[in-house]
Image 1 (cartoon, rainbow, N blue to C red):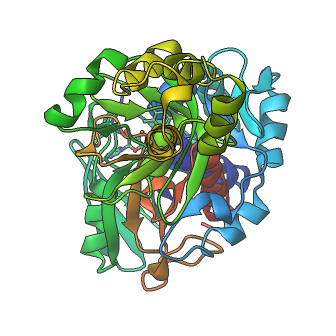
Image 2: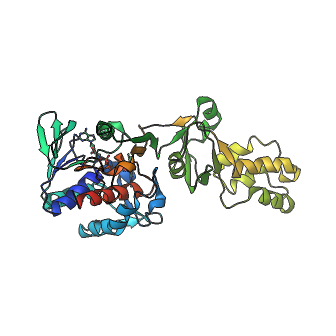
Image 3: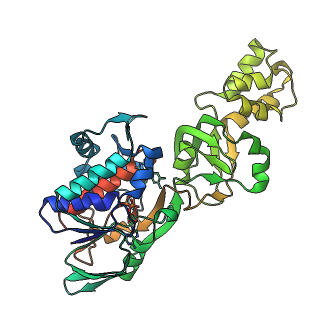
Length: 386
Ligand code: FDA
């Protein structure tokens, strides 16, 4: 069998199939396997999330990922990590990272591939595939290979400079499979130049925030950048953001700013708006917000002025001009429509022997290790049968 794409999903499928004594050829056009694993998690690879469930994924069919996720769990991957004596830590709740480098995860997978007898062929760009009888023909720049089963594990187009391609979508199209529209996800959001101008001085400010639209809410850190907004809260909401839509930012989640302002106006009347804000927000942000308030003391502020200030804190409504695109996106939302695939095996229902796994499929995880968990789980589901 041939697997195209030696990333997270492709390597996992190769290991599981190889352990079943299948003859596996794993091909990638990159010179090294698992390049996205290497750069993941800030170089520490957030390799899974202990509480990963179907609720952490976006897909036209939210139930599709359930079967694979339930059969290869975060603890199965953790067993592998511990077998290889890789030190790990839980950074935020459920988010497991390497204590050392993410290349330890790549090395672990390569070792497992070798132990399972997988033939890894790098620097081999696959130009096209075709069906021949019961099997498939895979054409690279230098070779024509035949294979009984064919697994497409070529990921999505995020970070093209890392060798990401739309190859998987082309194959899907060739075999008549539907594609769910693809867009950059887990990506910083940007403002128009005009909207950015007054915020430029705040670049680098980080604050714990709750970011929401009418469909979902995330409470995580937010970062102001020279282009717009980033940080975990923004990356998360970006996966749910549609162009033209506004996003609501609560800069002090858990604080009812209006209620607190009214109380403080009565009990601490000499407090300035800037002081009040800096008790809750980073000083640079507090001063910026206070600069548009023309009162020196809370005591002088009528209810309408308190309300305006409170709205800035609890309901900052932003309208991003766009996102930073595939160049900066951690993943791609959308992909091969799950209707075409068996949720148990990832095999294309209409083309026996053809499989799609990992990010190329219309299953997109939240930030926090869920995308790798999907890659491991979908890879394992395929590797068990292909
Ligand atoms: P992946 O992209 O890993 O692999 C696809 C492979 O196919 C590549 O090796 C590519 O070279 C190859 N390929 C493509 N076209 C080809 C062709 N025509 N011929 C031959 N080979 C071809 N997720 C997470 O859970 N935790 C994290 O910490 C992070 N961090 C993170 C940081 C950054 C900067 C990015 C960009 C992404 C993450 N992710 C993440 C997301 C995670 O990296 C991603 O979801 C998985 O790598 C997807 O695994 P796949 O195996 O599906 O694709």
